[in-house]
Length: 342
View 1 (cartoon, rainbow, N blue to C red):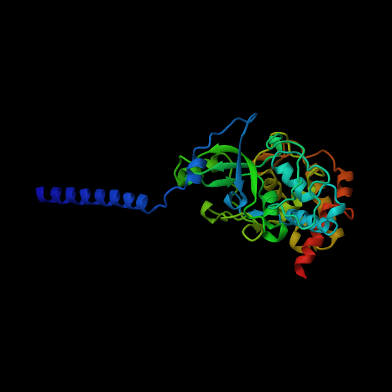
View 2 (spheres, rainbow, N blue to C red; view 1 turned 60 degrees about the horizontal axis):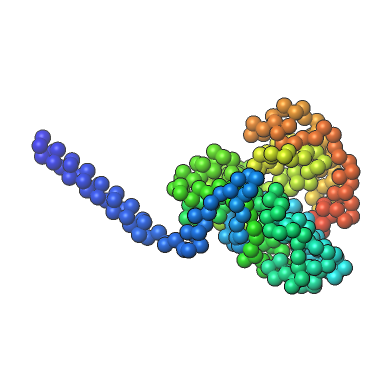
């Protein structure tokens, strides 16, 4: 009996020693933190009224969702490309206006960025925005600092993916300004993702609405990394037509709408020719009509009510007309999609 106890004690001691060794080995093999990582981990979060802003490169941003609506990005890329053909005549080029807005600087100043061949990463010498960086924080995108100083993008996947793919993909190291909503860098990997889920700062469903794990999230933004969710594009086009995001909108609001629209047989996008402007406009109208038909307390998806997601009480026909006219967002998106097939 005594021998058995001694053997058990020895085994326990050996297993404990192995656990300590394994932990020490893991620490020893983990790459040393760079000065940049240490600085990011030390970032102090501000308040909603006075957020902490941070300059990051696009290639430092890690997505918190696996898919985007490609047609939303195609609209921007299509418009950028169309304007580039006669850029000298465009007082406020859209791509530089978008960059100013994302940096919390309002619009681009007229005639400061309309130079042929200028990229977002290498703007014209005269390029100027209306306001200083961070002057309009409500327009800025948000990030969370995670373990080892990894920067997780929680808002702005479409805008920054557009920048990533614009100018022939020459903007991957473009520096942009973002708001830091949280610093969870002190947490371990598992605890970090538990916290991100609890605070609704990660969307773990792919472009077909199938569940994924945090480890399956893409490592970078951009069309080559993120999947396509066509219903997320449909929701983008119904914005201000069938719904309008509330002032304090829930994170990933558009994906709740997308999940709801996906379950409607009449809106089966696989059966609709999305290269046909009339067919696409028709399904946008149908989606908006379904949204406005909801009562405020009706549950859309994920426990969110129609009122929570900003459902309007009637279809905004004027905005629909703007969307579907020749120089509207839908036309640019379809033209760009067609150019990819050539």
